[in-house]
Image: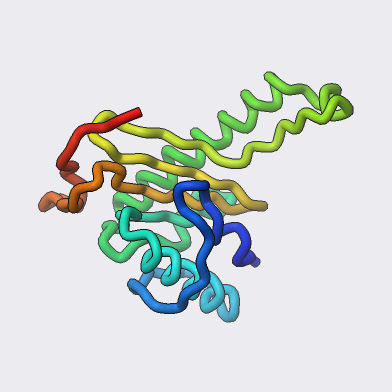
Length: 160
């Protein structure tokens, strides 16, 4: 089961929330797990208007949930690319901070990966047990415009 805690506090820029109003999401999960995750995702989307998309990826790299404005093919593309990327980040982190350093207080568990583009889009990947939660965020401060192919056409300059 995917607990609420893994989806409520993605980053300092996205504080936690549990409101139950918001947008509809696609779902391919079963039973009570679906309703709990749906409630969290709806609140998340309502509270953070800068979130322009998300994908929940299972341990096999298959998208189990994605944002309603994201075509299925794009969700599959994000899942394929980012599940491999996060896996490689975990491997690199374990090599950088080996298990022998754990006794010194250093931990080699990956919490999240953030990628920011020049156009002002940020992709945040959060891992929890066998799931990866990918959030696509508009950091331009301007309204986000979807192009005709379902992709985003950012309006503004990146920063940082």
